[in-house]
Image 1 (cartoon, rainbow, N blue to C red):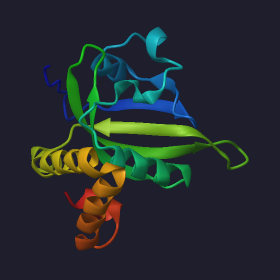
Image 2: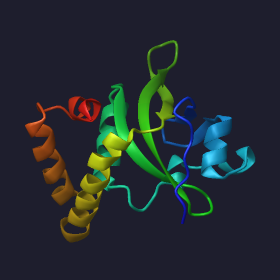
Image 3: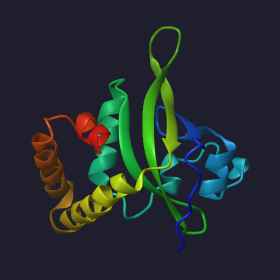
Length: 160
């Protein structure tokens, strides 16, 4: 499968409901994912989850966003035909007028090569740990790395 890329001046945007079902995707989201709008609206966002994406990262993302916290991460996504693309994502909660979370807003940019030189080997290590010891094993590795970087996941990611 081929790696897809996009310009550093472009942004991939999508929105989901609180369960992670897609409610909106901009043109670039549809293009990179390889889906028609009619195929993807209402589908679970994990329709584009790549098998080389560590489960511990998604666990962490959900922990952040369900509490209303903004989160950044590096993610490898899979397009409909099996191609893949890397993104640097920022996810924030969307609220109704009463302050209740009603969904999530995701904006993705092209990651830097410097970041990829750190993230790709880390994710391989996390995937390997998950295959041997489950999400607990990969979580331990990630927690140790974050601890060495000041103790916060967001600081670690933004330092890359």
